Amino acid sequence: MRGCFLMSAELGSHDVVVVGAGPVGMWLAAELHRGGVRPVVMERRAERPPHSKALTIYPRTLEQFAMRGIAGRWTAEGMPVPSSHYAILTNRLDLSFLDTRFPYTLFLPQRRTEELLAAHLAELGVPVLREHTVTELRQDADAVDLDVTTPDGTRRLRAPYVVGCDGAGSAVRKAAGLDWAGEPTAWTTILGDTELTDPPQGRALTLNRPGGSIYMVDLGGGRWRIAPIDHATLADPVSKPVTFADLRASTLRLAGTDFGMRETPDTWLSRVGDEARHAPAYQAGRVLLAGDAAHVHFPAGGQGLNLGLQDAANLGWKLAAAIRGLAPAGVLNTYSAERVPVALDVIADSRAQCALFANPTQAGIALRDRFNDLLGAHESLRKDLALRLSGLAIRYDGQAGDGSPGEGWRVPDLDLRGAPAPSVFGLLRSARFVLLVISSPEDTATAVQEPISAELAAGYRDRLDVVTAALASDHSDWAGFRALLIRPDGYVAWSHHRDMRAPVAPPLAEWLGDPGCG
Image (cartoon, rainbow, N blue to C red):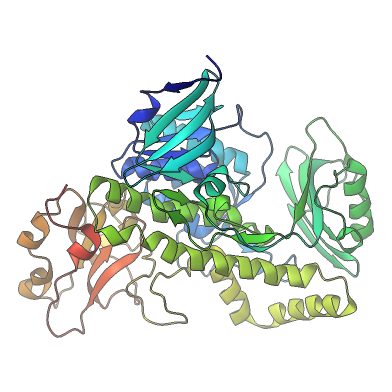
C-alpha cells in the first residue's frame, strides 16, 4: 500500500546498500561481493539510459577488470586506440610505450560497459533493484536507516553501510550532509550522437580553428559523436535546450561542413558545463560516496568514468574487510585519504584542458596553438601526459615525482614462474591480499622464508595468499624486491628490498587486522 512504511526482510538482509546502478555502483557491488559481504544495488530509474555519456576506458581500469579475470569481456568488443588527444589538440599522445598489457584507450560506449557489468552482477547473484528511490536516510553508531520508494510502496530498511553512487545530484550526499565544494558552471558546450551521410575519413577527427575546436568519433553503424567547443556559444546557459540545428550550426562554423548530418529518431543531444565540484571527504560515519556523487568536472579526455570505477576498486575491499572485522579500524579511513587527492588531480587536469580549448580570446587561442606545438616537439611531455591520463601513475604513498617502486605504487602484471598463476593479476582473482615472495638463484632458503614464515601467515589464511615465485621476464624495476604485500586492488602495501640487510616481517596486522579475527 503506497504512502505507508513497510519493513522489508528482503532489503534488510544486506550489509551494504549501493545507491545507483551506473558503472560505479555496479562495479562497487561486485567488489563488495568478492570481499565476502552482501550488497544490494538500488536504482531509481526503471530502465538503463539508451545513450552513452562516456566512451573511453583507460589502461588502469582495464587492469582492474583483469585482476578479476573479466577484462576480456571488454577487449573482445571494444576498439583499442593506441593514442589519445589532449585538450582536443591535433598532436596526440602515444600510449604504446606504457608498461601494461593494455597500452591503449579502449573505445566502448558506456551503455555497453553497463550491460557487461549488469551481466557480471547477475552471475555473482548480486541483486539490482530498479525503481527503488532513496528519499531519506538517518544513521546512528550501528547502522543507517533508509526510506525507499518502490513500485510496491515506501519501505524502511536498515543496513550497516550505504554508499552513494547516484551521480552529481546525489541524494545520498545531501542526506548525509557531506559538503560539496568547488565552482559552478561558467560556460557550456554541446555534444550529440547522430548519423552522418558524408563522414570524415578514418574513425576520428580533431580540428582547431580560430573560433574553437571540434572532436568527432565514429560510433559505428553510421553514427558519430560530435563534440564542438564553439566559442560563439560558450555563454549559453546550461539550462538552455539543445536543438539539432544548434549542433549543425556549430559543426558548420568549426569544420566548414556538416558532414551530411541527419537527424534520426535515436539522435541524442546534450549540453555540458564546466562545473568542477568535489566532496572534501567521501565518508560521513556509515555513509560513503563514489564516482560522480563525490566529484564532477568537465569531461575533458573522458576521465570521469575511469575515476569513478577506480574509486570503487579502492573502496570495495576496504569496506568489505571493515564489515567482516578483517581489517584494523583505520583502513576504511584511507579511502578518502587516498582517493580525494586523485580526484583533485583529475579536476585540475580537466581545468587545464579547458583553459586550452575554451578561451575565446586571442591570448587563449595563441596559448592553445603554442601548447599544441610543444606537444609535437617534446616526447617527454607527451609521455608524462599519457601516463597521467592512463591512470597508471596513481600512487598512494603521499609522495610526488619519480622514484623506485615501493609502498603505495601500482604493481604491474608481472610474469611469474612457479606460481599458481602465470602473472600477478592472476593471483588477485579472489580479491585477497597476496604476499609475493620473489625468489632468485642467489637466494638462500633462510633469507627468503624468514620474513614470511608459515607461523606468521597462519592466522590470516582467510584473507591472505602467500606465494613464492620467480619473475619470468625482465622487470628491472621490480627485480630488486624480495617480497611484496599486494593489496586486493593491486597496490603495494609493504615491500622488502634485497638491499635490506636483515629480513623484516611484513606488517600484516597493520593491513589485515588481528590474526584469526575472521
